[in-house]
Structure formats: C-alpha cells, structure tokens
Amino acid sequence: LHDALPISGFDLSSGGHLLPRHITALHNCRSSAQGVLDAFLSYPLEIALILPPILYATRAIYALIILIKLDFATGTPDSRLSKALSVEQLRVGEYLDRMTKMSGRLAKLDENNAQSRILLLVPKLKEWYTAEKMAATHVDNSLISLNLGSFAQGMRQSRSEERRVGNECGS
Image (cartoon, rainbow, N blue to C red; front, top):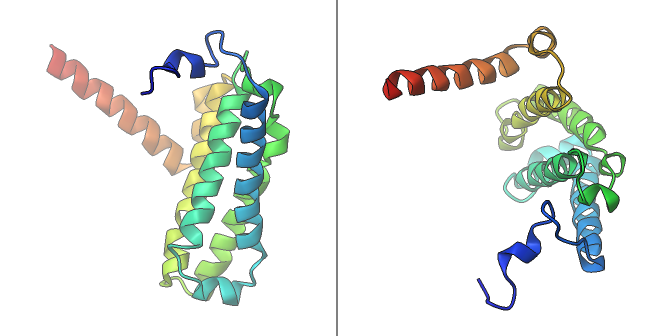
C-alpha cells in the first residue's frame, strides 16, 4: 500500500467522502456491466450457443455479480454510495430475470453445451439474491423457506450445520 494513499481514505462507511471521481467510477462500472449484459442478451439463441463460453457467459455472469455487489452496497441503510447511485439504476432484478430466461432457453436447445452448463448458475444466483434481499429487509425466515425452495433452504441448513459443528468443536 502506498504511503500517500492510506487505506482509511477509501473507507466510505466511516466518514470517508464520496468524491466526483468515485461517482464517475461507480457510473462507469454500472454502465460497463450493463453493456456486457445487454450485448450478451442481444444474441439470438443459436448464436449464443456457439459463442466461446469463457469469453461470453462467464463475463456476463461476472457483470451480473458486479451489479449485485453494487446493489447491496448502495441498498444498505446510511450508505454513502446511495447518494451517487440508486438501486433502481442497477436493474438487477431485470437482468436476473432476462439471464434466467436465456439460461432456460439455451438448456432446452442443448443442455450439454458449455454455454448452457455455465448459465445453470444464473437461476441459483437469482434464488440466492432474492433470499439475501429478503433477509436484508428483515422478512421472516419462514416466508423465505416457503417461497424460495430448496436452494435457499439448503443454504440455511448448511449455515446452521456449520454453527452446530463449530459449537461441538468449541465444547
């Protein structure tokens, strides 16, 4: 770490200031991620199936994850980032829906194709995102279990199992 730029200067949660260059960087990051997703989602299915998956599907998923991270960073209470970027501008739900639909359509065309297999991650990512957003808004966990199915339940079960094992090891 360079001495002239201490890490404390980058901490926006504890009094750091959001500078114009930060705002520009946030908007560039958002528009770049959305550009990658828009480009990938604009391909006809037959073309999407033959694209190199490392170059296209993984980058689209990574762009989606960037938008999700920005969503959580701007959506937290008292977030300084929310002054520069709104959750609505990110359109995470829209992109998750569109990517999930594309994933399903590609799997119907050829479920063994590398692109289709990589995109199997998207519905699980959507379930995780929905569960985390619901948990962040303090919705009762029993509603999450009823509405999100096995993925969300499995995540909670693995967390409780980790706690149980940790408690047994700590005893």
